[in-house]
Length: 286
Ligand SMILES: [Zn+2]
Image (cartoon, rainbow, N blue to C red; front, side, top):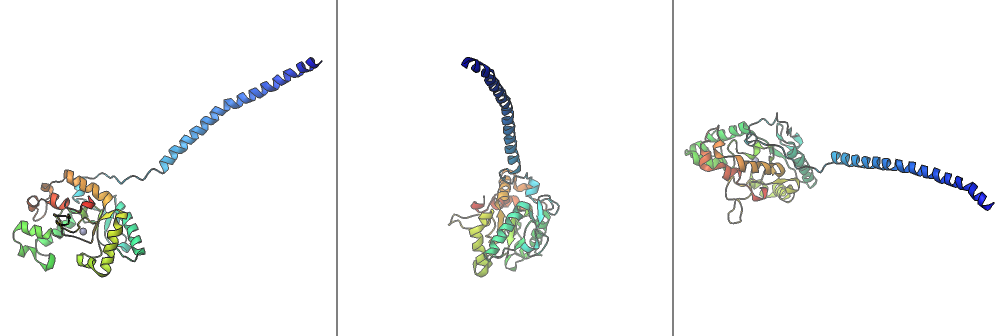
């Protein structure tokens, strides 16, 4: 009887077991699919996350020699934006977007420290630089100390070298690039005492945090400083993440004989504009 009972219950046990087993199998059969789905979802999520938040790339636009030489209109160029007048001494200035965004951050940080940074010059293309250069070349616009360069320096190379103390030949200016600004005042003395010194000291301490560097640093062979190029300009600052690429391209591809199309351009080769002026910048900005 004991065995009979056992036998009676046995199929049920099997039945339950089989049923249970079948359910388990059914569950197992579903599981890999579910797991697969989860995995697929995870993978999709990873891909989505990567697509939405990639590591911020270094700006890497393609540049041409025409661009380096300022032969474009910044007002029409898609990579340029107009500078808000709250950052400048007037309207009509343009900068590359990357330069402008970083400048705005630097401006606000400086302001929080009681320092005002005012853009007094930004992008100047070839034709703008040509008008400045030729006015100085012809004596219509005075160079330093009120000097008429056309009268005082009849020799073309000497005249060019005098103008080059502070002004670039058209085609060779960093102001073509949309990366460079002049701030507050075109006079080193302004930045050597009083409120101007506070501005300069702030820039020396913090400009690099925003990618800016002073390309025309003190010229001083004894101190291991620059030996060629423009005189020191404490007001001129470059946005290096872009300007460095442009300097590299100039070093690789630009030659003095490409510089032309304005009065006195024949002196460019004799002077060595690319090596001495375009590349004659603060080593910290290279
Ligand atoms: Zn400048």
